[in-house]
Length: 312
Image (cartoon, rainbow, N blue to C red; front, side, top):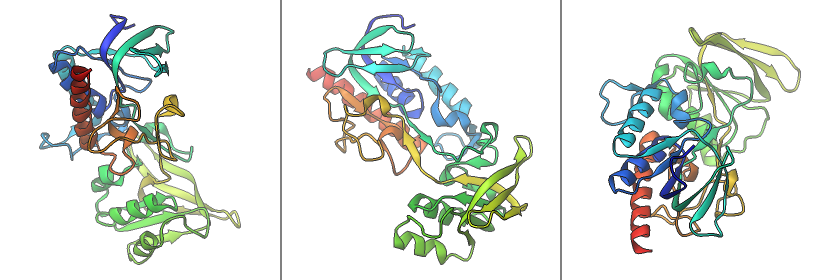
């Protein structure tokens, strides 16, 4: 339960965007409250080695990166509460926020940093995410140097992920359940022209072999036409590239968002369609989805909120 009933700034989400916003807001003497949600730390808590975050020469574990950032925010006075949000009333000022516990607090300004969740087929073992199973080639491709990997999907994301992985993998098996691809012609042509990409159409992955200790040791494909199965026992990585779902259901019909659900912000600011509400990180980023870019947006959101509060 929060220590107070009213806060100048409430931050929804505790990934790199939310925690960076908390650092900046607390250093500005705004005593922010961070509502950590059902998955404190966001997607980084399911990532093992993070080697592309500046300042960590030898890399750092995802959960550890979140932990040290959280402690940094707390050192400056940010309050952290393990609570999710069930409702935000944007028609009143200050904004009433209803928590999962039933408590209601108010905020003069809100930073939405609730992130996005990678879509998976449902066959993946959650314990193996970050241990051979991934949804981010940019984050994890480096760990599959000279290995074979599988990418599942048929849109631009799948083509982009597969093409990127050819920088490291010996073979990228691109698996799509249909004959036709949803990807744009240019992205599809680029992927099909790459000799390292082997396409498996009219197929789905029915099983991923391996354990958290061994990592991925192979996958089983099943034909959507004949039902025939094929085992790829040389595969050591599995990438889901069927999209991400931003965690914005709470604001559907309230804040302006695109057709997928990503919040729209008034670039170069983090302002949403309602004054006093700001958005940072993957919740408003369908393109980059990196910890470092989320942290940068969290910094911007806190500065935007601070200036908005000073003005109003």
